[in-house]
Every structure is written in structure tokens, then in C-alpha cells.
Length: 336
Image 1 (cartoon, helix red, strand yellow):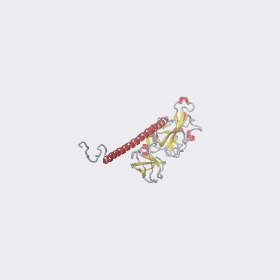
Image 2 (cartoon, one colour; image 1 turned 90 degrees about the horizontal axis):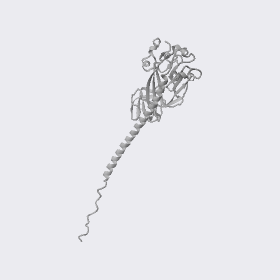
Image 3 (tube, one colour; image 1 turned 120 degrees about the vertical axis):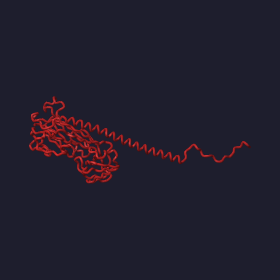
Image 4 (cartoon, helix red, strand yellow; image 1 turned 135 degrees about the vertical axis):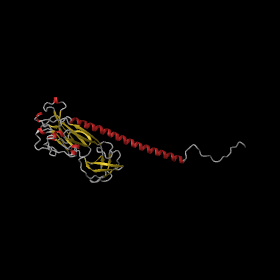
């Protein structure tokens, strides 16, 4: 009888598991850590995309500017006795898109192999205005021969030979050699001295809007003139990043630009980088918050474009802008 088990009541709950409160606390901690990890991953992916876009744009921009500088550094200007059958010219002007179009004569890379034109060639740079939408293609056309009916000056190539894509803006400003103009009755404004001219005509007789235009001077080689240097501004629109949409209609006079997100766009109030591209209009902006940009005073219709209305849902782009100055070896007048 003394060996019978005693009744000790109902079994006690195990102390080896988690209580409901502990489970809730653990789940909350995991949710917070998961959200933080997701946020970090999104930031890392965004940063990676931006850096990849920046690297690709930098490579493209440097390749374009490198070839352009190589071409322009060989631009040639000489009196008419170089070759009386050859028009030695340099013509640069704005095209229909507000970008710069250039046609000029340059020295050949292998002048001894080109006897007929005495070592000269024609080169044209322009954007493809026939594409009808941004970003644009940039074209480079070369002709190993100068003058005649096949001259690039006669054909004025459009769109030309494809060279690079994703171009948002291509502008060349021309700076005169002031020392060679002391005998000219022409006054340059401070802005023209500091920021250059929008066009150039070495013959002085082709482009009537040129500052130094002289009637009947197209075929007179002795007053031809070349700039001292040129400044190139090039914007590359990346394939990834720097893209959002308008969340409300933007009229032609509004400075408030409401968008889905501004993350990854250029910094505020940067004279070179702070530009937006909507349809075919460039807009310079000064400030931004999470979902809007503010256009600078006079910033609508920037970069030679026209301010216009844009519908909600329109794509808003930006790009990486590069700037380069190239000095011209044959600057000044052909004859002094």
C-alpha cells in the first residue's frame, strides 16, 4: 500500500517553449530587421544603377568628345593659294533641335596619300533631327575629298552617319581671336566674350546671322577667319536611372514640376547639371523635394528649346553633362 503513486494534480505547462508575448516581440523584431534590410537593398540597387549609368555615360561622353577634339584640332584654314579649286571652310550653326551642326575642312590623317586635295578632307557633326524624339543620335560624316558637287557643304548631310546614341544636348560655342579683330568695326558684348558666339562662318559670306558677316565674301579667301577656341557642352541621357513621370499637367508658364520621384536626379542649382528634359523641352531647375522640381527664373525653354505644355504621365529625364574646351591651331585671319 505504501508503494502506490501519489496524486500531484494536473500536469504543469512546459517551460521550454515561447510565450505568446515573446513570439509577438520576436516577430516585431524580425519585421523591423526585414524592413531595414529591404530598404538597404533598395538603396544599394539604386546606388549601383546610378553608378553603372554614370560609368556608361562617362565612357560614351569621353569617346564622343575625344573624337570631336581630334577632328576639330585638325581644322584647316589657309589663303586661297593652298588650292584654288578647294573651298576651305568652317561652318557651325544651330539646327532645328537647338543643337549645333558643324561642317568643316580638316587636314587628312595621311596627307601624303591624298594628293588630289593636297591632304584635306571634309567632316560634319550633327544630331539626327529626323528621329522626332529625345534622346537623339549624334552623327559624324567624313569625306576624303574636298569641294565639288559631292561636298558636304553642298549636301548639308541630314541625318548623316550614325556615331553615338543617347545624346540629349550637343552645343558648340565659338570664341573669336580678339587679337586678329583689331581692324574690324565690330563690338562684342561681355556675354559674347565670356560665353562665345552661337555660330561661326569662316568665309563670312555664307551665314547672314554671323557676327562678322560680310556680303559677297563667300568666295573671297583673304578675309576668312577662324575662332581662337570652341567650347563643347554634351549631355548623355543614361539608359537606367534619372527618369520619372509628371504626376500633373505642366503648362508652358509653370515653374512647379510635380513628378513621381526625384531620387537619383542631378543636384539643385548646378549650372552645368541641373537640367530636366520633358518631351523636347529642356528646363533648368533650382530646387527639388521628394516629388517636385522648381524651374529657375527663365529656366523654361532652356538650351535653345521652346517652353510648352506637357501632359501628366510625360517622361521626365535628366543626364550627365560634359564640357570641353578645344583651342584651334589655325586661329585668326587667313591673311593679315
